[in-house]
Amino acid sequence: MPAKVTGAGASSSSAPLTVPAPRPPIIAGTLYRGREGMWSWVLHRITGVAIYFFLLVHILDTALVRISPEAYNVVIESYKTPIMGLGELALVGAIGFHALNGLRIILIDFWGVGTRRHRALFYGVLGLWAVLMIGFAPRHLMNVFGG
Figure (cartoon, one colour):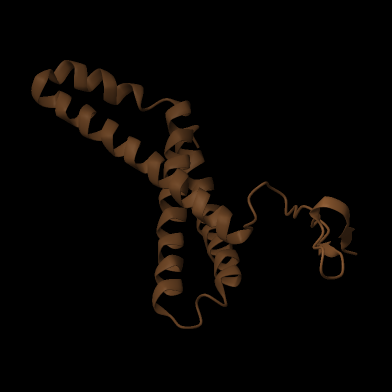
């Protein structure tokens, strides 16, 4: 219900001014108002940055072969540890999500129905990504942990 203002802030020639009551805060899980769209945006940026840094390290370690083949061999040998195997799994997951979400963004941009179906597309991306990771992860982890 609007609050009535009287006194110095009121108009002298008409009825008292009404000021709308403040709206309650919108809480949807985060301080940001978005939901699926926001999380899609955040995950797309995080996976993009992670892929960028992987590519930077990959270019640098590959360049070692021209500088010092021995140092290159040491670096490549360090990649054969279980920790790096888990890192490879995370990298494949990041690349897979980033690629599928990129296709979702293209559909939203160029398909007339895409903006109305962006939530369903997001959950479709998550579902397809999960199916692909469930297919990839066991085989990769068997190779990493000596299966």
